[in-house]
Amino acid sequence: MMAYIGLGSNLSTKAGNSEKTLRSALSLLPNFGVTIKEISPFYTTAPIGPFVQPDYVNAVAHIIWEKDARSLLNQLHKVEALFLRERTQRWQARTLDLDLLDFDSLVVPDEESWERAGRTSKAPDGLILPHPRLHQRQFVLKPFSDIAPEWIHPVLKCTISELLAALPDQNVRRLD
Image 1 (tube, rainbow, N blue to C red):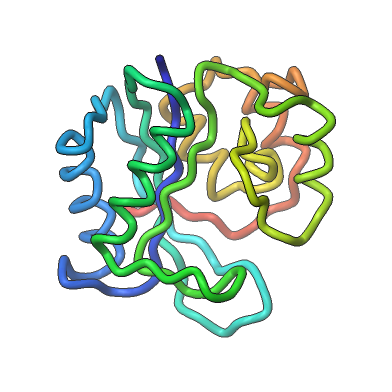
Image 2 (tube, rainbow, N blue to C red):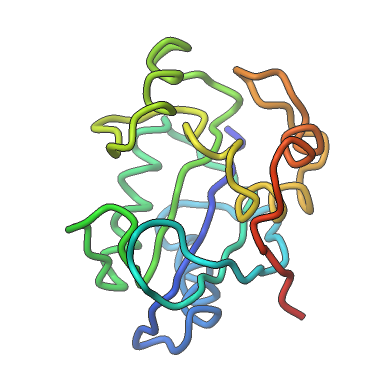
């Protein structure tokens, strides 16, 4: 199955700064059964939320996964744990964030649940696909558009270009 994962970091780890952390996490994914097809350029992004914290480094990876979406999410959480990811507060600074953005264009569990998850400020308890806020975030859409410009949101039926055009500038800048 084809999937896309969002990567983010704004805290240093034993691997180094946020960019090095993302590169290290990407290099570990094959050990967890993930086949990487393509990786976007990296972007720097101002943080979201109420906390003062460093800017993020973000990217998107196109991957192949031979099992179901839930098992992929579990493997992504294992990789996050290797980088001492903490989940104590929403929108807190993080060593590594691996988000399952899309899995074979599936809508999980259903469109109504997806819409409800996108309206709440609380993190969802279960798997929601596509990611319920990816269409609101330039830090996801810009790198996503670099590797999958033809991708169409399975609920909104919009291209990435259309989703990006609907957003105000969120100060997302490509790293060179």
